[in-house]
Length: 176
Image (tube, rainbow, N blue to C red; front, side, top):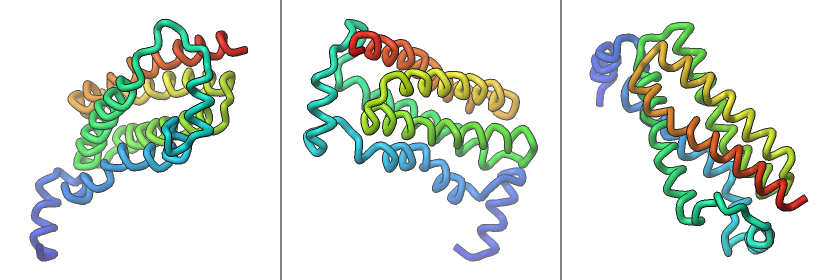
């Protein structure tokens, strides 16, 4: 693609980033949490984390382990979609604020995993989950002012993190 073709496509995005660049950056909604949490995933690849997690007394509200990657792929897909839509939108202060909150939440997802699984810090993980819930709700409120479909795609983050906060608190209570 020539520089002129890139400029033509860029102009069609109403001043936002070129769609290919926006898609590449938006994929960070998958890549960043994966990179931050990969070394602390409770899997046979990480036996110390795996056995610690298996040892925890779990509350009855905990879904099957298979539900977690399914939920996170769906949530991160929504965040990538929202990020793409924000990145191709016309630049504005609202867009910048929504993108900053999106980035903070994406990092927070991976950070929570490191804190819970890597740090094995259940009290701090509960507080971090509640903080992620608050920043997620703030993010959805801000992105709604810029792009309603992006906001709708981000609501599952808030719903899941609300549940995850309750679940983390319950795990903490059962394992004091």
